[in-house]
Amino acid sequence: MRHALQCLVLLTSLTSASAQALDVLDGRLQLHGFASQAVVDSSANQFFGNSQATSFDFTEIGLNTSYRIAPSVLAAAQVLVRRAGEMSDGTPSLDYGLLDLTAISNARQRLGLRLGRIKNPFGLYNETRDVPFTRPGIFLPQVIYYDKVRNLLLSYDGVMLYGDLFGESGNLSLNLGAGRSVVDENVEWAYFGADYDGDLEAQGINWGIGSLWFSTPADELKLGLSAILTEMTYDAGATSPLDSGTIDVFDWVASFQYNAADWTLSAEYARTPTRWNDLGPYFPFDDQVMEGYYLQGAYRLRPDLELMARYEEGFANRDSRDGWAFSALTGGITPRFDFFSKIWTLGLRWDIDPHVMFRLEYQRHDGTYALSIRENPDPNALVREWDVFAASLSVRF
Amino acid sequence: MCGGLLLNASHPAHAQDLIAHPSTGVDSLSRNEARLLFTMRVKQWPDGTPVKVFVLPDNDALHGRFVSGLLELYPYQLRRVWDRQLFSGTGQAPVTVANEHEMMERVASNPGAIGYVSGPFDPTSVRILEVR
Image 1 (tube, rainbow over the protein chains, first blue to last red):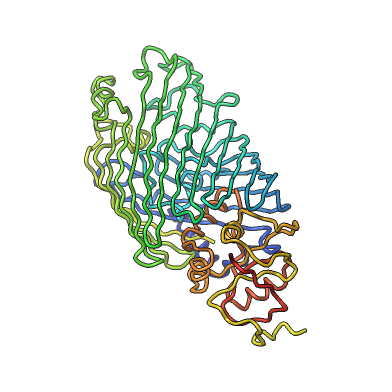
Image 2: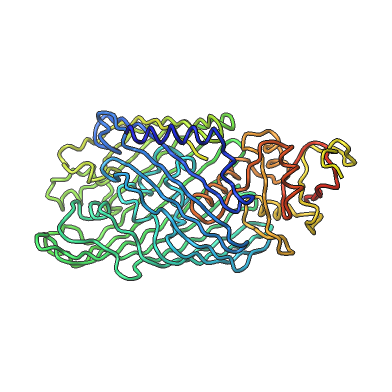
């Protein structure tokens, strides 16, 4: 906590001292960064730390550099430090590190290739999900952008082919990628409900992504379809109750956004068919289709002041949205409301200046599906209806 | 030639003008082309010179007028596009200058540069681009 605040103070003074000094060689070499500290308080359950007792365990710091080696070659990398309760401990990680080669680029079309660790252009927000300034609120809609298993969507190591068509009636963008996903302990917790002996890992090329976007020339309307296909392999350890097996996940989302001068309306619908294979008799689930959607409106009272309201619903099993079926599979140990979440969010964003942002947010939750099992390991301690109050201060340069 | 003769204007003062380095071999741009340049998606002029984009801060009044008047976008959209690129490693942000005076200087002295001004200026140091 103290460490995070020190960084924040340092970055604030850096950004206010000279925000423009970090473009070298007329902008060919750039250095940018951000830092954010949130405080989270909840009426029950653990959300981004020990939120019942007020949590300061949600800190995000990023530092990136990019160098345009030639007009058609860009090298870029970002290091991310993220603390998020029990889900993320602040160990610095390579968020992305890539080489971007543009083969064709003119006013009608663009075609290029990216190599390295690449962020997924999944939905409206995944690519820059850890940059507070680019999010619609302190928390992303958890029914689609699960923070409990963010690595499932976040990034991958591999290649991506991208193409754009620019026209008078709109722009069309297509991204196609393949590579290897980055599996962490949160993925294991989310899919097994525990951290069993053995490894859940990516083997070979286990990841494919495609996304297609259409936008009108001035970006009033934006429509997208993104999908990720991934297979993870579980190698059971000697003391694991499970057998070795695989998990197949197909995640897709349809995105809509409309931008007007004073307001922005966004909506997304996602579905995630998941299959667990050969994990043995002690693993209760074999397949499920997760589902999530939200409608979100943002209204700008002034260019620097924005109000946001959102309603979202998410289900662990769309064939049994009330959660009875999965609760029965656990022998009733896990309550049915752990398999859905219905969340109202109200938020306020104040851009104090172009480099400093303050946010306030309130959420009313019905259900606990959005929570991390790792943060809430005891199903008996879960509370169905709960509130979240959060505030955050973010700086950038 | 003195670069300080900014007030010796032969060009009528508009609300805002799109300007480029005099060596830029282009006289006009379509609105779409201007958007592609300012969103940093087109990075070269037709003759191959790298494009260098200069802008004023997001909360500058002239920036707001330029973005809504000439590009017909909202400043928050432009910021969103730049942030998406610069925080995902898929592109860069334009260079932000402190004021119009610096804008003039940087555009006049950098081949491939593009920017905007509101006031009268010396037409020999930069070139005006008409937006069709």
